[in-house]
Amino acid sequence: MKKTVLFDLDGTLIDSTPAILDGFRTAFTTQRKPTPSDEAIKALVGYPLDIIFARLGVAENAVQDYIDIYKDRYRQIYLEQTTLLEFAKEALELASKNANLGIVTTKTTKYSINILENLGVMKFVKTVVGRDDVIHPKPDPEPINLALTRLDKTSDEDRKNSFMIGDTIMDMLSAKGADINPLGVLCGYQNKEQLEKQTQNIFKNSFEAVKFLSNL
Image 1 (tube, helix red, strand yellow):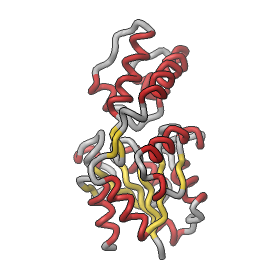
Image 2: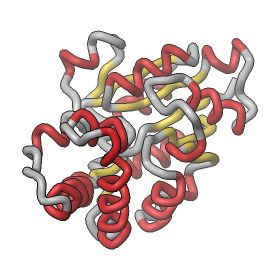
Image 3: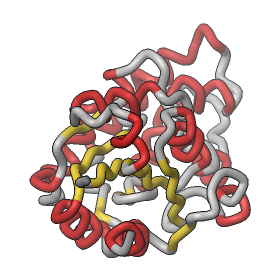
Image 4: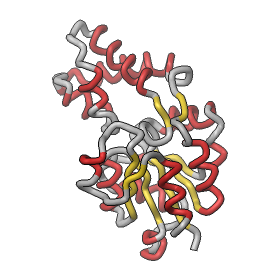
């Protein structure tokens, strides 16, 4: 049976940290509020924007204003400030030979597809599930379940042969909630100690994870 491999985006396949940090700095500066440290922002990457701004201390009634400023800035710079992580292209190319590929991210679908096309790797991907496609984002299983539905891989047997590769606990929890196999990578925003709380399958990067799957 052909495997299904789902990838997170930020910290798993791409590095858009400069654009993300720029967007947050612009939002706080525009609102004339102290800008959180880069470390505080990066520790929350992977969550939806509304949750990140709330955890950074923004009042609930002001969160949408911050998001709007962030998105206005982000759309100006995101393509030029986003790069593929090392061996990410090789991971996608190898996985596409043996599996159905999908992307499951908390970025919006439009931005995600534009990034993948700009980096020359969208050709390997069959579906992209973004924040705007679901009601409940990761760590909820809804995004993964939607990706599996789009790929027509929803049976119990399909799920046994489905894998989620990501760099955060949110990815691991979403995978476990959808009853598929979580694989962690250390090229992103969380460390081995954090990922080990949810999976024992942890790899240096997405290419190492895909090589592991190729041998199953």
